[in-house]
Image 1 (tube, rainbow, N blue to C red):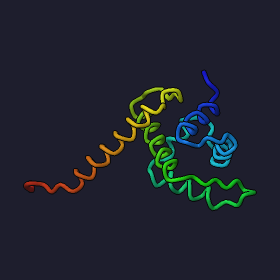
Image 2 (cartoon, rainbow, N blue to C red; image 1 turned 60 degrees about the vertical axis):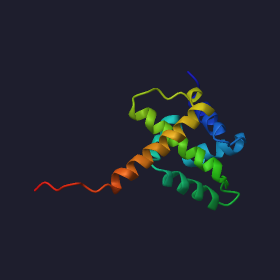
Image 3 (tube, rainbow, N blue to C red; image 1 turned 90 degrees about the vertical axis):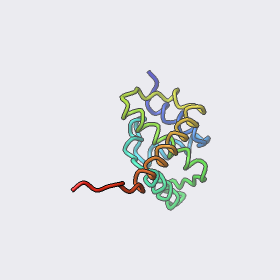
Image 4 (cartoon, rainbow, N blue to C red; image 1 turned 120 degrees about the vertical axis):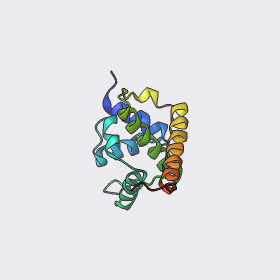
Amino acid sequence: MANPIDNLHAVFAMCGITDKATRMNIINREGFTQLEDLGVLETDTDVSEMAKRMATRTQAEGRVLLGTVVIKRLQTLVWWVRDQQKRGLTLDAADFDAAAMNQASEMKTLRREHQERDNTRKPLFLII
């Protein structure tokens, strides 16, 4: 069983955060201790807010600037973690590779589009 912090480093590196000190800063400042912690971020907005919070810190407070692609990948990572948890699957950093990230991104987009379609459908008739 891999160290939980090593698992976080692995998935953050897969998202494009290549600098180990930056990954450690995010892990420590945001309070992550294991992959499961990413599941508390529920939406893309939660990830965007985290990125904004990290960017507004001073250098001494551990400022981290994340690019758009990295933020999108982190949003996909959070979706993947939450999907794995919903389906009762084990969270293993080794399972979040480039192929899994691409598949998760596609599934995330398809589910969002499906939900948007369902929300805009009007009932054909009304039962009283």
